[in-house]
Amino acid sequence: MKAHFVTFEGIEGSGKTTVAEAVYEAMVKVGISVILTREPGGTGLSEDIRRILLDPGRSSISPKSELLLYLASRAQLVEETIRPGLVKGTSVLCDRFMDASVAYQGWARGLGEQLVEDMNAFAVGDTVPAMTFLLDLPVEVGFRRGPEKREGTGLRTKDRLERENRSFHERVREGYLRLAERRKERFVVVDATLALEDVLGEIFRNLEKLFHVKLL
Image (cartoon, rainbow, N blue to C red; front, side, top):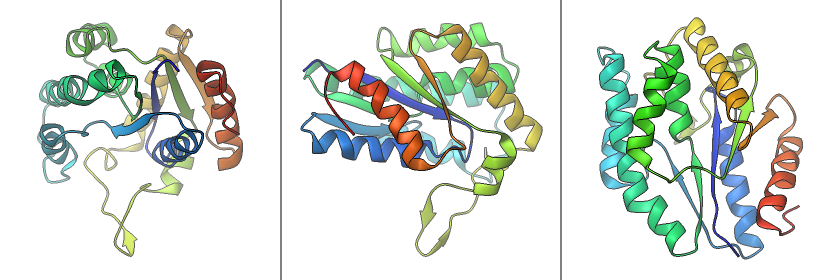
């Protein structure tokens, strides 16, 4: 079975982490060789960068510095985890990837979509997702859901990006939808307001076409 690189994108509260984990478990059950990683993160260096980027105490990070940190984390993840996995025949699922920078830094921060896409190309080379699922929902719905992950027995503290105002997150959503329109060949936009089983059903149907195996 050919290895494929699949990514999951969406605004805060879209459920992409939960979905990525469920897809990973389903693929393992049917015998697909697959790894699940995340961005920023996924390697020792990338996780160090993640802590800097998401630290709520670092509100002074400039948009340019933010972008460069994401690109450094991304380049390391590609070199250390994603590309070697694909070469070995292992499919890779990633919770966020290069499209996040186009939406967050390129559009929402105003650095320019084309600039970020050009810099992404330098960071990832030809390691581009075969399919990207955009879990789309209104920002107010994402806000009501709150942080997806939990620490211990209670909700974790909001990270630096989650603390941005509503207008910022509206621009992020707009940036994602603009990108999905330009990259129709690999983007699948999924209504993330639906029940989890319906969201997964839509994703599984698309992945079955890619992997030629039954996942449901």
